[in-house]
Amino acid sequence: MTRGLSFTTIVFAACLAGSFAYAADEQAAPTAEAPAAAPAPAPAQMPTGPAPPWATPEVLKAQLEIRLTEEQHQPFREIVGKFISDRTSMILMEIRKSPPNLDQDIRSRSHSLEMNMDKALKPVLTAEQWKPYEAYKKVLLKQLNKPPPS
Image (tube, rainbow, N blue to C red; front, side, top):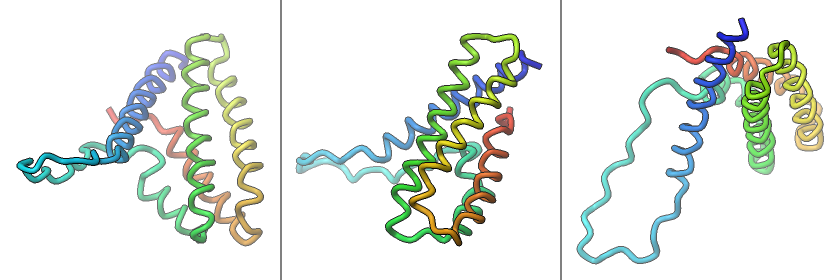
C-alpha cells in the first residue's frame, strides 16, 4: 500500500508543480517596452489534460456555494492556497522520510493543516458561510486524496 501511495503522491506532486509553473507564466507581467515591429502575440494556449484537483467542476461549484463577497475572495484564495501548498510539501517530506506508518502520518499531519486552515478562515467567513465552507472542504479533500489519472 505504501508503494502505491508513494508513486501516486509523487505523480500528484509533479502535476501540482506543473500547475503552479503554468499559473506563474500566466501571471508574468508584460514588458514595459515592446519593439515597434513586433508581431502580434499568439493567443494564449489552454493547458491540456485534467484540471488540478482544486479546480475541478465539483470543487469550484462547492466554492460558489459559499457565496464569498469581493473582500473575502483574496484572503480565502490565499488561505486555501497555503493549505494546498503546505499539504503537498508535507506529503513529499513524509515520503522522503519513508516512515513505516506513512499513511497514518500523512493523515494526521493533513488533519492538523486542515485545522490551521479552519482557524485562519474563521475570521474571514460569516456564520452562514461556515456550513457551505465545510461542504467545500469535504469536496476539496476528496479531490486532493484521489490518485491522479494515469
